[in-house]
Image 1 (cartoon, rainbow, N blue to C red):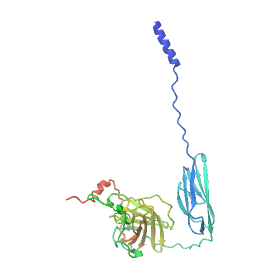
Image 2: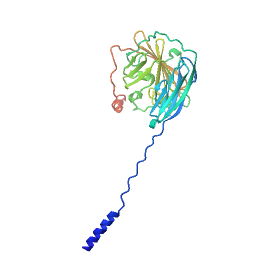
Image 3: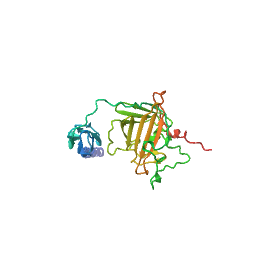
Image 4: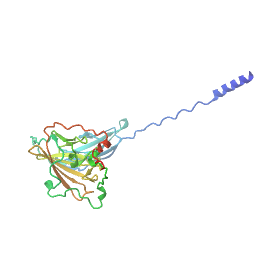
Length: 327
């Protein structure tokens, strides 16, 4: 009995004297970095009235980014053209955590008076419609006169030429976006929708589209490279001119890769029979000796009101349709 009592007493004493378990370490408080303005400038600080000027900015960690008096809310990094009619101070404001703000200003000095715009809007041809692929004249000189039949590589740039194996189904079989004139050569229709401010070009294959503003604006500074590039349109009489830059390097031109310096100018004109006259001038000073021009004509399909849906569910299966079986 004494032994039992002593053991019980010892156990009670040891339990009472045991230190409490250590508390879990507190999680460190996350400190959100403050918003910062890295850059805010105008490409030109003195312009004539009515002349556009490019504002360029870059910020870090903003909750919101605005430029006053215009264009208003903007992305954390970018560029945008404005057309001040008088000397204007633009203010870039970023807000960060706990209502922290930072501002920076740039002033654009304007001289002269803006030209008086015509009260009558110019009526442009309506390019809207569904068009057939391919067709028309082969590569040639177009408006610019004689030109090489296709891209000519600079010396030392042979590595840009695409070499295909016997089982390679070809450039147009992988369901990836297609840039430049090649986009109109796939065996599927394309469609154009047009209003006063935009032209939208839809390609049934591979299901891509381009939204092109037609106000004759200017390109953003150093646009992020994309499959179809950044397109800016304007009207020259009855011809729509689309200027495109900012391409990534994942597309090809007549079996040749290109660099991010690719620049394409396209011209679209409605013919008297409703067909679409197309001309494209392509240049890439990093890869090709000189620009070259492609001209084609695409027949209108008045029997079609819209293009069909195309979904490439498995491009590996799809590529089999393009491979010639071995004999």
